[in-house]
Length: 249
Image (tube, rainbow, N blue to C red):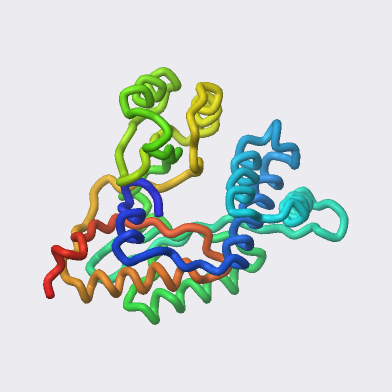
């Protein structure tokens, strides 16, 4: 997943993400609806909605689906549907901290499902504030390494007011303050920089290294189960994992 949570590295370790197209569309649709509800249905005046639409188009979501999602958020006609953003906190095996972002139209249903997933996968759902203090909310912009030299991007990052530039295999991660995400992304775009995505993320202050393969697999299974839930939008962790070839046999 995102940034310093090491989730991107973990996903590469365990293989390609095999998400169903319908599930991807569902999650993108909810983000569009929430963005439209919070900031209006005009993407020109709503940076979050504009970003969500770009992500949907990158995933080949049909325009009709995008328009319906916007109408659900703004409450137009028969498409009105109100989603609420909720954050859950908990622990995976090995003391790994998890933050789970959900979007739901039924808080009771979602809470029960998330709690069940934690319980069935050797984790524990915890109370609000139990792990969030270990993370900071940030903006994250993903830039393909093949599209620009690092020195040039670093110069632009400093000019736009971003906080940090890091490397993550074949992409650069531009980290911003939450309220600067869309301004920095727009500035990079105007400078001709190609970006893959832009979104909010949670970055942990410190990470926990999991060297035991069986424990690492339990953490992965829990996070996969959470991500497979229709109401879950994102999963973040403070997991650090050894590369596959370094794990004990």
